Amino acid sequence: PEIMSAEQFQTDGQFDLAKYRRYLTSGTDPQLLAALEARYRQEIPRAKLFDQLVADVYLSDVKLWQAYRDQHDSVTLRLLQVFPDLAVADSEVLVSDAEIETYYDRHREEFERRAVAYLSYVEVSREANAADSAAALARARAVRQELASGADFAAVASRESSDTVSAAQGGDLGETTRGRFVPEFERAALALRPGELSQPVRSPFGYHLIKLESKSGDTYRARHILIGITPAGAHLDSLDAQIDTLDRRAADQLDDPTALDSAAAVLGLPIKVALPVVEGSRVQALPHVVPDAGIWAFEAEVGETSPLIDADRASFVFRLDSLTPGGVPPLPEIREMVRRRILTEKKREAVRQLAERSAADLASGAVSLDQLAARFRATVTTVGPFTRANPGPAVQNEPVIVGAAFGLAVGEIGGPLSGEEGVYFMQPALRRQADSTAFVAQLATQRAQALQVARQARVRLVLGSLRAAADVQDRRKDLERAQREAEERAQSLPGVPANQRRAS
Image (cartoon, rainbow, N blue to C red; front, side, top):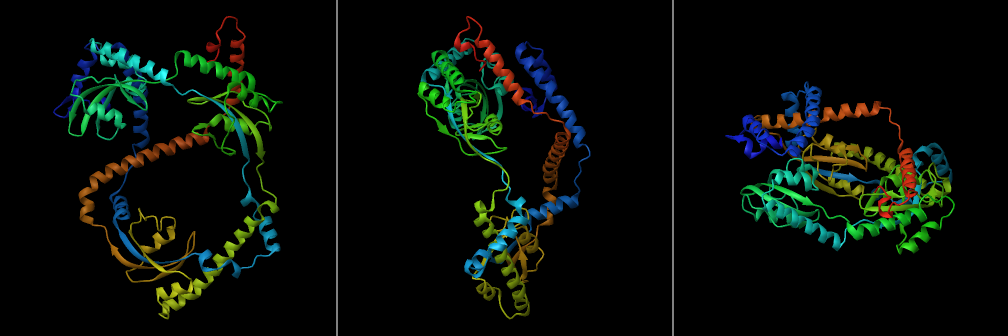
């Protein structure tokens, strides 16, 4: 898509295959051509498979009209919401010890919970410092000098840029509009004249060298080379030494819980506490997320330390401080939770029965909707307008309200309806129907958008079925063990500097 929309390959607003072929045969950088070939060797089979999977996806006018109505039919309601906790006081409901014990025995599976691990850790951050930033800036200036001397931008981008996606396109970011990129980049790009090359521009991603290709209003096309800011030189050597010390002194300790404290003291680093880890979730060592630690935590014994674990910008050793087992807790631990559950169910039933009795009074005209609200210590509120597809925050968690609202005539009272959070009565105050003429006018656009969504859903369904049928074996622990053994063998080699012994 980027190639077909590139301005240099356009004739009268259409992709010109002849221009593209001339470009490929006109001495284009071989590395760029190789990158393009590798990309399209992946993309073309993927596109063919996509076409085969979605060939029979079809949407009728009737289905599209219903979808349009879901978006444009609207209703405004007078709504009486009766919430059990507000309508019935706790003092009006009695819960006996026998009821608590019986409920616990009959609903044990509802109280089952996953195990929770509590971890502490030492972290060696691999964030860049001022010296690293200066080195990256110097590199960016050297690359700019190369470009200013006549080097091909695409070739240099494919060799130097840390943005591997655009590097494969010779640094081309395609045609874009204002607001897509970070402000630092965008301000610098839009300040250039077409064909002009920027000085190094600092952003959260590093230093950019930007070449503006074209600009028209808020639309522009640019290329860039990103020089990332990462630890280097003496700083990298220092970090490697710290990580080696942490690995050697604290990692994989099975019988010495104090090893982590000793390593922290030697390194002058604090021992931090991770957020509680529920089995099956990832470890949150803020601001980092460390998936591998979540696997290790539930295989370890209390007091053990983890292998050295590398995340994106830090290395860690964790210690399992305590573990709350999974399963059903004993009743004394959750007695109040069980009592509240019974209390809520009794309140809901009391409200439901009162609502059923009140419905007859409402139907006969003995009471109005506002008078009925007083019985429940509630008020009638106006909600909407809302549509079936976009019910809005007031009723989006209660499908029963949305479904019933569009089945009532204006002025007709419906209810009682039992929902997730309470019991409801409603009265439509205003209805608006979708405009069939407007539907026909936009049908082609709607069909194209809906087909795209339906095709993507088909692909997700097929992929989901393949994953469900796949026989997946988790061998991450074996791979981690093999990596550690390889690192240990490397450390035993004579003459290998410490900062080169670690694969990371």
